[in-house]
Image 1 (cartoon, rainbow, N blue to C red):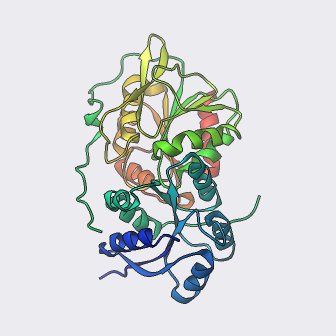
Image 2 (image 1 turned 30 degrees about the horizontal axis):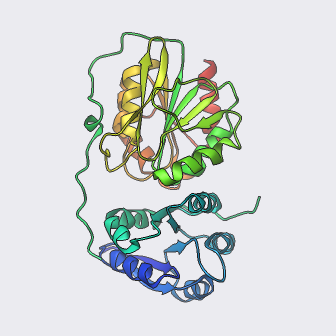
Image 3 (image 1 turned 60 degrees about the vertical axis):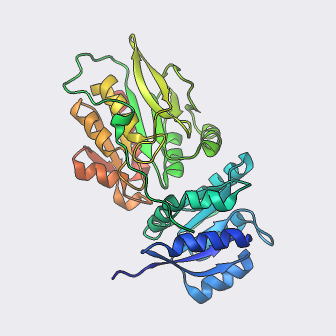
Length: 358
């Protein structure tokens, strides 16, 4: 029997501590080895109990979660999953925590916290399991578990088509997918691109309450324009379009142009936006003029869609295992034969630029 992942819960709410404990202990792979009410208590518990993973509330007395996280990642880097409120302020702070080195986050509402956390039991367990095996970096300043819902494939939103595309335009499109660890990976890639880059469409697994804040945060540091698209918006060079957290992002042709289409279909592989859905639309509408990029993320979303892109003549690359927080989605695409080349994260932007000028 494999060793269980040891989890320390750090939260000032007794209700949250109790609910998370119940959810985690219901898992066959996780166990709660302790709880802490504030960062000072957590510091002692970490020394005593040596946990594998920490859940950390962002808003706590004595010291806020991000300040504690900065100290933790500087002195004793370890996998941390943040617990964040579904507010605009909570979104900004959560993105800062991911920048500092948190692996992932679990969002909670201001009200009905107990019911909301129980509803997302499966997702919470999955995120903590992934965090237990995730790679972390040192920070350097500059209840009853619900049954797993049936996983739908991209066909729930967009039917698969057979045969090669019969058209080819001169406009190139880059399609990029990511999940766990993806917010910082996407930011690093986009910051490396010049203003004359091709149009880029992005699906990142992120809730709607956080997607707008993430897009605005990235846009401030890039030469290209980064935005959430509206339905029917034209895809332009020098622009990156990040899917809203509650819609699938598809690429469609409109004459000789490409446009963004937002789809409110069901979650695919439990994700909305789904990378598979976006990649399939790119395969069907862009074909050999597309480049697929798969960054860090858990699960296998996007692997099938990326293979469809390759079958239509697209050039596909992925982030290599060593530089991924979680090599789930890139690994699945590699194993399926959908990836042409793998690169460390710092070289992916350069490869996109190289593709643009060829």
